[in-house]
Length: 299
Image (cartoon, rainbow, N blue to C red; front, side, top):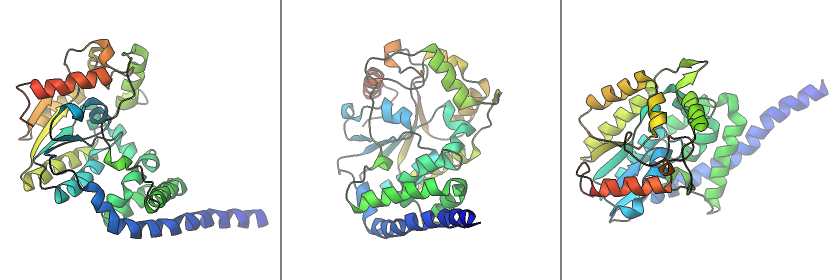
């Protein structure tokens, strides 16, 4: 019985101990977080999205542009990040948003309110409105200790001036001398589009926030461009047809400019093993293509 009581107390004690510094961190964040979204006044174009944007757009090659792509960032988190950016940076007049077939898959829901949320969402917690913070707490109730530890660490590092600003993203690629590998591409396809050997559903939640991003840009007079980064031919061929059709349907239903590089011919060395992302060499090729192509709009 004593052991049982100790376990119960321990269960409630740790969230409390972790929760106190979180509250302190929240108070600090309320007054300081916004300044992190102040960009240089010569930045007119921002790239936002997940790792495909983060690893695929070398903004040093694109004048007056800034890559703010972040690994595993859903449209849900992109929306609130972009909302904050636009409210503080009147110099922004163009937004590139990364979208591809995987963006439509319900596997992405795991990063928002599923079993991977506790690992991904803490870095965004303090930029969200209070109502959305409550949703994150509710979504992570089964992983509450891990989630609280994550947002507690985030608050602690902010207070101590050691915040890594992972929520801000930025061009990053450690893939220098790589190439696509068939076995890795097969695993990637299975992870993104299949569950129990059946194709996954579409993520209505992620699609909803893609719509909200378009509406946000429209309200603010911001030009929005959807961009689909290159995919290795083998990977592209394995993408289930319903997802290809769905992306075509989504894009055609929006009055936005769309740059589709998914079938862009690149050498194998322009990809990383999963065939779903480009390497440094590929990022250079895309960025130069963006700058030079008549498909793109001026920067």
